[in-house]
Length: 467
Image (cartoon, rainbow, N blue to C red; front, side, top):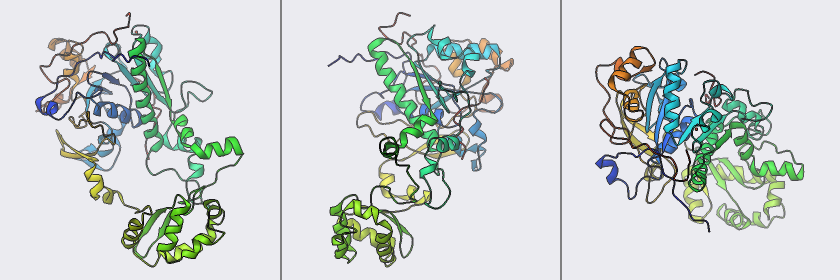
């Protein structure tokens, strides 16, 4: 077994007492510095996941408008977009003009201090600004550079702008989603963006592990299209190996029956009968034990082939009771069943609350905000929730002062020349300081990223995200 050599991060976090007391062990990504050049959803979602696990994430934003999602809405709460809030907690906002030479120079200096750079410009845009992978890795070979795009860094369609709905359509997901006799549907959330964000996190973490062994970083190339193709899973292999073109089945399953939703006396219920033994039990609980002995329904293969005949029997039966009554009956018999909840019902659920899937943070202008929690539950190093989604340029001066060691006069000059924007420029009070990370008066220890190393604003984001 290969010995694992822990990577040596570039930045050491300074945690407040309240944060330190909440951890059994240091956060898994404590000390990792991430420069986030991404916008909209896939990239910001990825960097938020990294931040939740202890990384310091510096979010670069255009000074006039910031991240595009600051304008996505309604709804807005006290002028702040709830869309932006969804994927930007635990980050530090630096508003800097990438169209200026000084702005690009600042961001380049930050990239050379970072362990990970994340960007979602159209392929070639970052390179034109001197912020491409080839530009930076020459000066910092240990850098991990994550590029998220619509179609990837290679191939004939690499330069196309990519948006969630395009990826769902071109990646085949829409062709298998929706009613059997209706039009193709996209998934209700921007899952192409979110899946790309999750793959970006996996890629970044794998690259960190590789760097700990080799001392070198690498390019992580993630595309919305590739993510959608990967989700075709068993439907894709049906085509690749059996020549079977998958069809839409509405809420039914292509290979399992009954495995769908049914109308009840007061709503709908989802039922998942994943094997023949469960179907025997379901038949008994429905008061129709003979169904499991019917040759049309006795095996899963037979039920799939005769699903229309099966549903002619099951649909009237499910109409005889309420959703709650059916769930009580089926749960008691060990048959997987559940309601179709609205979003408000999801967050009212005792199970969702017990799992900590809502976190609470204090926003400097909105006040208390509730955000969706991180679904990864680590027993010794759980996610941290410390910083509310930042205001535009909320941390510009702190980042330059602490990471780049710039003086107050240098920072003031940049602000006066319009290179950077600090939130307090337009407001009387500065937002409250967070409990950890790059807090005022804290020192950041910047060093080599790996013990084995010898030492390298314009464009459309390629992960649209808009619904």
